[in-house]
Image 1: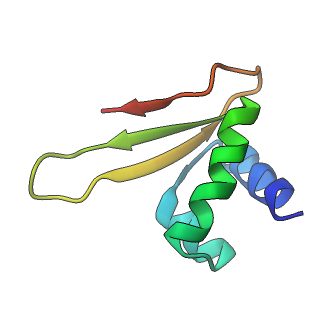
Image 2 (image 1 turned 60 degrees about the horizontal axis):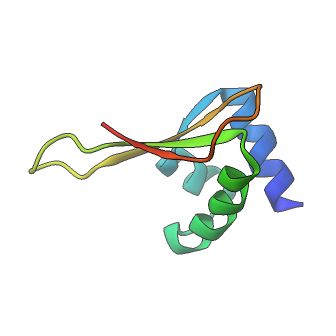
Length: 76
C-alpha cells in the first residue's frame, strides 16, 4: 500500500526531492531507500543525484516517466 502511495505521489508531482518525500510520508532515509529501489526496478521512476560541488550535500530527486524505462540512477 505504501509503495502505491509513493508511486502515485511521484506520478502526480512528476519530480520530487527526496526531502519532500521524507517529510510527506514521515519516513527516514534508511526506510525510504528500499521502497524506492523496488519502484525504480519496476521501471517508471528514475533517481537523479545532483552533486552540487564539494561543500554542499547532494540533492536527490525522483521523477516519473509514463513509459517504462531502463532502471537507472543519473549523477549530475
